[in-house]
Image 1 (cartoon, rainbow, N blue to C red):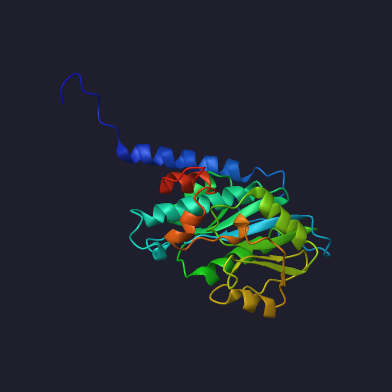
Image 2 (image 1 turned 30 degrees about the vertical axis):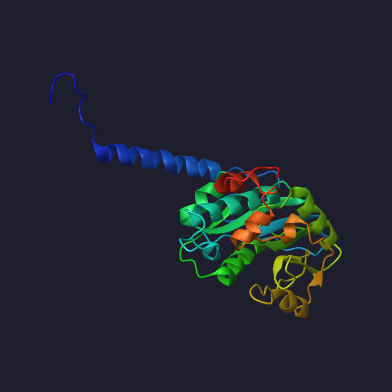
Length: 261
């Protein structure tokens, strides 16, 4: 070592100090309640109450975040997982801005969880992702601990890049009049959103033919116009092209689309 070279740091000491700082920061962060009564991390207190008319919503959004995300896009996009993440982030950000939404709970693998944490969403990390149904079940179980008088629970797919806060707000307002409600996709066979008012219990049936399955489970179909971004989930390149003038900012950047035709 020459005289003008700095001495080497003790790597173990550096790592130990960093761990102590991070632990202290986490403790301080978890001690701060949110003004909505929802906390981003830590285990909330389960609230037992008599149901009241629904005034606000927790929205659960399951996110895949794996290497085969949006596989139906084929090879037409150079980085499908990055595009899928952009779509999910635009969806979650729109949901968080909806008027009566007090919290968006994202269920995602650790590989993409930090991106949603940066949006100030509540994040539940799936250590071992087991598919959509399992992610939704995890989200419902966690959301049950966030129950409060007048608070309903919505489950929404994470691939709605043209969704606007106003569209989601309108649907959730309509949903307050029903114990269970749903919004079908634009094709008319699937489902993009299901809701359960305060005191009601979900019976999710996402998958092929879910519109019919949810109707049979007691979900009332909401009158949402077929042009609404809420009804346009994205599975294929054609789906993206059809929405190119309405895409959220991250999806627009990921696809090179512009705001206008």
